[in-house]
Length: 257
Image (cartoon, rainbow, N blue to C red):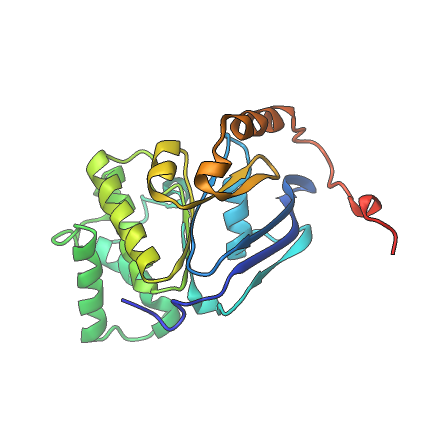
């Protein structure tokens, strides 16, 4: 699959602050994520990694700053949430869940054609779930749920793909298969941004990394970012952060015009 938006432009993030009840979870984040890049977002627990992705996809509104997507329309962004965000008790079959990836194209009440059904079958085959079509999602293992989420993402055929902890709590074989899909998207010049915890996976498969600790500690080539000094600084920054802090204003730090 390859959508018209596969060559979507870069993401420009400028002085971004996002939080909850006026308490920032990330603050003053500025980044440029290049077109067709494969970027990992890493940092200690509580660093704001998932918050950043939710801001990018529009689930959280910025308190300050702005996000610009160059050459990306609303139909050009695919978001794969954490498993914890999925209601696995909802009475839905695997095939119906995966077919949600077609909704932006056909609409909520649009007819699913024979060609659409073939695309769903191809997506399930690509993630190793052929034969699971009629299984309820509540019956799936953690690894099978993650494969199902990737199948839905495949159907969205987006130029910008945001993945939140897609390789957490799954078996080694599933992780390897899903990494292959991520590399495939990268090979198709899609822009892929992935929240990860395993730094060995990041070093082995992701050319670029953002190290986050409520604010950006470093961004660039993975080997340059994941240094002992940067990782120590990120841990210290998260430990020192006050969750009750109000949004800070850095306008006074700017030089006078």
